[in-house]
Length: 421
Image 1: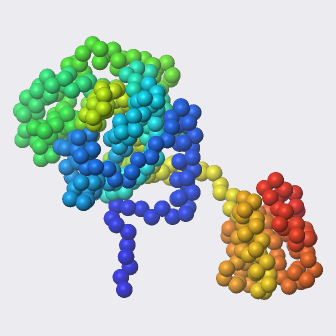
Image 2: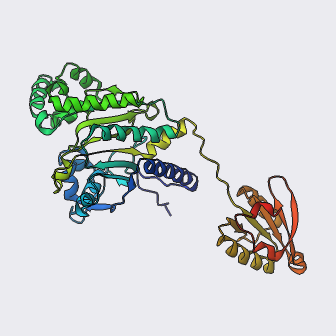
Image 3: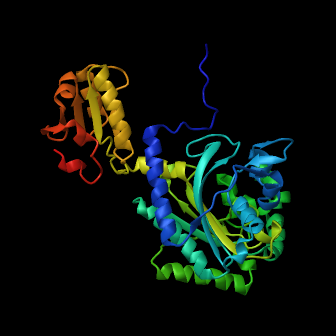
């Protein structure tokens, strides 16, 4: 019979990697808390219309990559910003505070070609600050993301920032860009040819070397922006400099969603190959309004956990050592096994991590398993121990042993565990 395998582009997160992910998530939550961001969780699937209206019907994600079902009424979420804004509007979060600072850790789903760092089911953490147009919140958002990456020892990163203005400011620029690119139509990829009519701004995000050369002489969006937009961006840059964040202004940097306006940013790592962006985000000052709310400025970012773990693995990141089991019970005979089972049940309720044998193995095999589990202590129970009312507890680090009354076992807790031997 053939083995049923996991769907292409998905991951089995085995215990060893699960422990690493929990550590990453705990660290991320700690840092978000330092910046006063509160966690939000949204449904795994949303109304398809949310993503069509929010991300843009002609984006690659909406047109090609979404997992939709029930006659296309619902879609597994491919990103989190639109769901967070939907929840912000639906639950009237604007009434609780002038600014909502929210974060998430969640799975997303996109039907795209799997490759290193890119999966069809993937995890991201991210933040959204809703309600402020202040340039300081732009700088805080970038600082927050960098702080998280620096926390994992990632310092050799390239930070790119840009401003893409608002929709009105981009109109004239897009006309000039289309005129310029039309002269090079024969040298554009089929994807870029389609984008030329639908969303020419996305061509700036091309990875095609020939197209990158063509874009070297294309009009620069920054030249078409208002003084107000330029001043906002310059203030963001000055603020980042004041808090010692090094960055590169890249006037070609755009993001893949239609909702972005003004400040955009990415953090890039050479450890990821062609898919080198580990972190990205920007302003989306029109999205709340697009989704039915009042005009509200906002900014956010997202970071891929799988991509982060790839970088950490390549850099041999030293995750904290897991302490393993506190006590392993080694028992011989049915009565001893019965006693051990009752003992571990009691101790687990006192937050003692303990284990007993469920395979009826020899004492030698059970001791070997205790070593494998990195157990701090071993308690040996057999017929003689049950008869005498005493047992031996062994400290595995140095082999030190001590005989204790059986009733003492039930008094073990976190505070006295290491004083028993």
